[in-house]
Length: 375
Image (cartoon, rainbow, N blue to C red; front, side, top):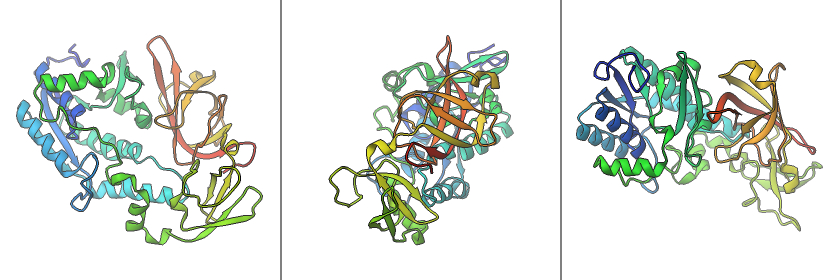
């Protein structure tokens, strides 16, 4: 059994490394080559970046493909580019726009992992007869009796398990995440030690097709009709202002509402059917229950019969919760206080054991409830 848990010699073990052109995946590819595995690096071309802003850093852009190619040449591995622009447009960009137009707050990175990366690239690696697909994600993977489980990474500040909740069991059994047990600073140090050209390359900051974080400009480009004026109302239904399009707002937003008030106003709800934005006080943002859709379960049902932890945003803390999976519309009762939860985000389930925080699965948030309203 080799270090990847595969019953072959390293030389005979064929692995595909998903190379984004960043430091993390470059280090992973170099480590696999150094260990003696038969490595092929694959980079995905996901969108036409020729007209994108050059400010900031995004993944899967033109420079990243060049960097991935240079790393591959440096460590002497085969490298391929897969042109997935059409898949990415349909599965990720269009889905992102649809979600925003419906008044939700989407997470395109989850969609990207779920579709073009862990579905399409997974299939491509299988077709290549590769023994494993390896990525630079910061998550831990523990395998027992041929069945893999996912855990939060050792470096909780870099942990990416939230973005991978939709990984299927079949995919998880095939995937490997070598960076799950090290800190980001160690990855940087390894890149310098390996003399990789990306050692000092900044991390991606924005969604790749949303440079500078300007979501509305992307929606205006692809769906200009989404910018339709409508009412801003309070919790009693009284109009107190007018908006230029619901896609300019997210739940929990305070700045940019442009309504004078004695107390700060926050976006409490967005009603796409009525094209209205509902505002209220901060206490109206407290959510005590959420309803989910499209669950992905990675653990036996009995593990949900106790109080577990959940995450409702990638940078959020773990919250105590109780989950009812038996209902037609699965619901989560949040036992800790949390504000600003929005439909379209993900709710990821965790359970603490002797190893760490195990990912039990998750689902998309469909509705949220508090004492003032439900969406």
